Image (cartoon, rainbow over all chains, first blue to last red; front, side, top):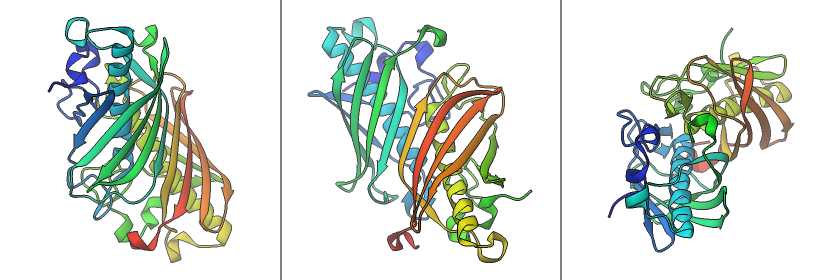
Length: 153
Length: 153
């Protein structure tokens, strides 16, 4: 299984959240499986809001990068782009919404699931869930837009 | 000038985003000035989305913790709680919304401004702006709720 982020061009591979070339970052890795984006993440012991609970800013960061990866895979699928040959389309986040349903326990791997609601020519809307031990603790919604020329797109 | 986060009880001071006792964290520090929360943050060189631009997950994290600090200060002011004597009320994030207006350049210190829209008995709604070089690059909205007993509140 390879990852959507493996197919980002090198200029797009330095992201703190998901860039394979960022030595300090989270390295979120999105698998595209049957029309959904899937990812697993293991927080560090210091990624806490309170002792025993995962930091909400990390939850937001994971939802953000995983949703952008899912948007890229969904757009590629819709447009007939082959990631292996042509690379992944580059999207950036226009809006990020996170609903914290309950505290996320620190310990179990965090599982992320994301799915495209709508794939347009320039915009993809992605919804997502983050769960721990099989319990959904946060929901996300991201509006992803094609990277503007001002950022090198 | 002291900071809202200086008055969080020790159990609340380990947050990766703003805890004074988290050795690995961001140490967001909110000043309460004339009814607004103010903070300044200097990203590390590796906090990037793309070379030259600040990572959106960091922007979301800063808005989150600064808004919670602002909610605590606003609630204390509304309820007549003296932070120095009684400590800051503890809030957690129920919802986080971030609108990315334009890319945030890496380099200048990031300035955060947040203000309470509504202070209830259990909930505070906070709006915010993040700017770099005087240009607002992101807007935030956070619904903060008193910390539930399940988290030690």
